[in-house]
Image 1: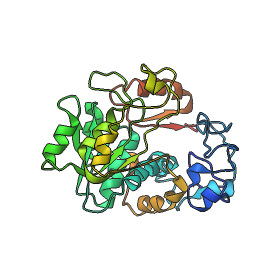
Image 2: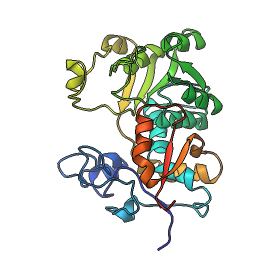
Image 3: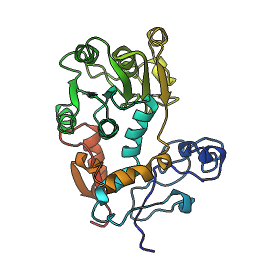
Length: 303
């Protein structure tokens, strides 16, 4: 009783084949008939959402991460271990980022900003963050990244110009299927094709932005079936690699907690709003509309 803990957004049993490999985002037990379970996530089981005063935690002895003694003091940092910090870190892992390499991160939402933070912790030589929202790009710059405004000039051209025409060693997709072209129209292939173009030959691309098997509300037939007009020819010709999927939070959260504890990481720097739980629905509306200044919301049930 009284322990401070943090839970992954996804649920692992700890004993299935995938969990034993560290692939807890693809647990074979917690959502029977599928690989992967999560709180309040479509097609990932019947578990209630985690934004609540109380939460029933399956396999709690495995999923709960006991936090260091400064948990109360650094609560807003440690809470990011539930999702966005490990997911941003996972993007750089999937891309294969090594110290001294360059990386382009598409998307300056919370996950993209955490991917940039992770890349800098890992010792990336250049970190580019691509988005079309000036307020989010300003935050990326404050964190030490090079902002790329995709509305001012093509993102690919800007990145090539800043890397002597070579492109980056690695790339991260942190937007997902709802990415938009420069006219604001949803086009699920835009970031993936831009990544192929802005990543150098033999480079690695990590995809943590959500893509879905079906999107019935999409505006084109391919997207409705969860498919896209992907530039596979250029991808193949450049000998690149792509790795995808949600973060296996348990594989990272203990080490990331140590980075926070020893002042090597500060994920709370992206928080823009601290609100009561009942203010959540309105906050979601602001965030969904990409209203200026709404970068990351923390809900406090006890407030």
